[in-house]
Image (tube, helix red, strand yellow):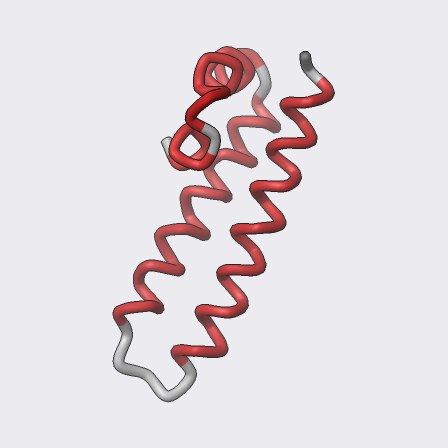
Length: 75
């Protein structure tokens, strides 16, 4: 799971919240999708590669921040 890879020290909390909260599961899925898209763009031989990578890096950062804030609220 991408969320656990991002926050390995909070793996148990992530798994528990994902088990019980559908919105949190969606957030985790969005993070995984964004990370996968970033990896694809990093490998793409495209003239827009750098712009897309920057967009996906921002998205991954924002999703991770939202995920972390959700975890903090559920402590």
